[in-house]
Length: 209
Ligand SMILES: [Zn+2]
Image (tube, rainbow, N blue to C red; front, side, top):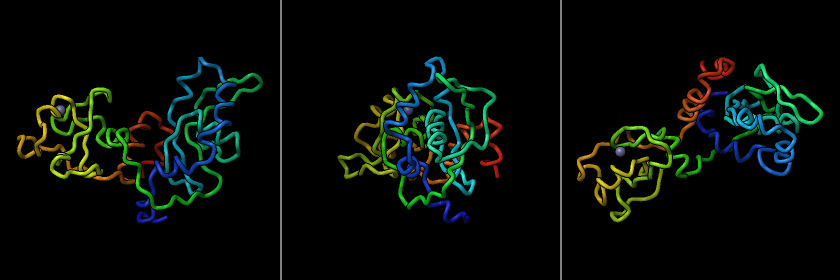
């Protein structure tokens, strides 16, 4: 698989296209599992395409649904199990889709959540990290000046900087952007996968090459 073709893939696109990630099967599986394991079920799992290309990060719960449905198999496991009424299930750390999934060219959904993810919860003006609840989205070129709601014109911004900037451009307000805002690319996504998975040695061989 070429770098070029990788460049067209986005995790969000897969999340939407991936079978079994939502729906009744998911909730049924959830109900079988002990609530004590709820936090474990939220642990991140790296999802590989059939070709071993990393394409997404999901939660243990969804990963196990995909395994139970025969859509994916575990490539790496945690040394722990979750118990349902009748069975013990090993907890996956990395899963691989059994059938190759073509991810159509599709940009990641423009949303508040994804903008904050791209900007890593960092105010793009004062460069401080905030909880999501303390961040807003700033239109770099204000809407009143014709600024649009696009990846290139929206940044994570703390309320203080947002008030300070008001209806002005960064230049007018004497503010400087930490970095030029860009759309989500697979490069960005893979960096995020690395950030999410940096504690899990089992992810390394799939992500660090
Ligand atoms: Zn700020």
